[in-house]
Image 1 (cartoon, rainbow, N blue to C red):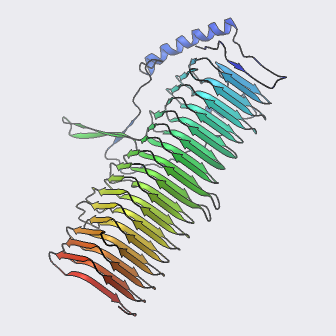
Image 2 (image 1 turned 90 degrees about the vertical axis):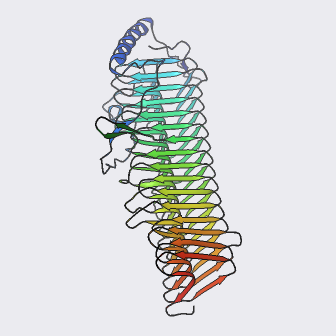
Image 3 (image 1 turned 180 degrees about the vertical axis):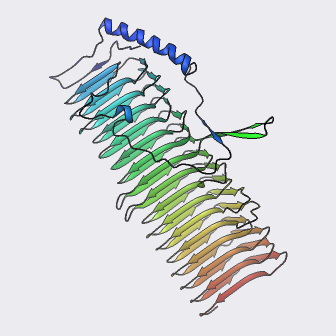
Length: 585
């Protein structure tokens, strides 16, 4: 039913328009709404305005060994049924609808409830050339419910102009058969500000806020957002695309569905995300049937707390996070992912929040706390607690660069566990540059455990590899537990390797069936320099080494003023080993 008592549009001073519904139209719409709601109760399972909370997970068979990677399709307007071209009329919002070839300004102060068989939109502003400005005031709560079509709380679209949406009220959008968006905005430049609570429950697509721009897009959210899908689809708390993307979020975000993402930002230019809100993406629930002896897993296939990616040349992609993030998925989970794949692009993360990432099965893409990848520099600064648990590969922090510098500075606690029995790596900190330098500095506590892998199973507290110079400085605590265990693994193809374990710092390793190293430094062409003033201790079933320096063409230098203790069950136990094939050791 449409409630439109004092809703109005404010155009230019000479072209002010008032939107009203005549009594007959209001009566017809009320009757249609009652009929639609009756069917919704029968077909959608007791979905009414007073009962919005429904299950938002999709059943997964536990024996499924692979996943179809379906990319997110950017929406020109909205998906399929909302595609607008020259042969179709613009969207019709039955509650408030304004269409113009010029500027549109809508200011709504009243609650609106729209329930339809087909598409349901509470407020719509569509301009074929002008700008669109929509304001929905506090307490003007919106509800859009559709049985067969799409449901959108606020819809703002301009073919060539700017779009601005400001919402301070609660929005609920539900679609039993299509997409659901709390707020949708598309235009040349797009600005969305939201302080209200948003819940979007869709069939195969749901977004609390969806903002798309040809140029710059900005989203500033302080309200709580919940987005969920019921089928094999995608759920986003915030979804933003444009040539330049800025997202600021301080609200709590929950995203549940087959593919679940708290904040998604895509661009061919710069991306900046600043998050201080709590993010929960994805979930897993395993139910065992004692009568059949089978386990059925319900929940998310892939889950990501924050995902930012740009393919533009020299694009800077950055994320600053102080909120707590949980990401739980069957085939993979990542707390924060930042990718800048264009020529000279940079990726950076500054995190002080607590991150938890969990992957349920060994068949998947792994679990990551923080992941960065760039053509140019890739950097991570972390002071938060990171916990990663995976039945496959598990990594706390990754910084990967193709042609720039890969650097990680960590002062937080990192705990990484791979529970697989078939040989997957567990890595606390990973820094890699294919053609540049690598730098890792740790003052926190880092633990990596690859549990009981009887095949090829590595555990690295720190793994630093590069083409150029590679340096590792540790003033904290490092521990690695696996078939092959490395406190510090540092290697360079063409540069020098430098490792410093400071006074008061500690490195420990435990290898239950293979080899263990406190520090392993390898240089193919350059020199290796290792300085230990702290404690190094470890046990290995076969070879156990406190410090091992190897230079194939250069020199090796090891300085020790600390404590080194190693033990082997069946093979050599060595405190310090320095080997230079063609240089000085």
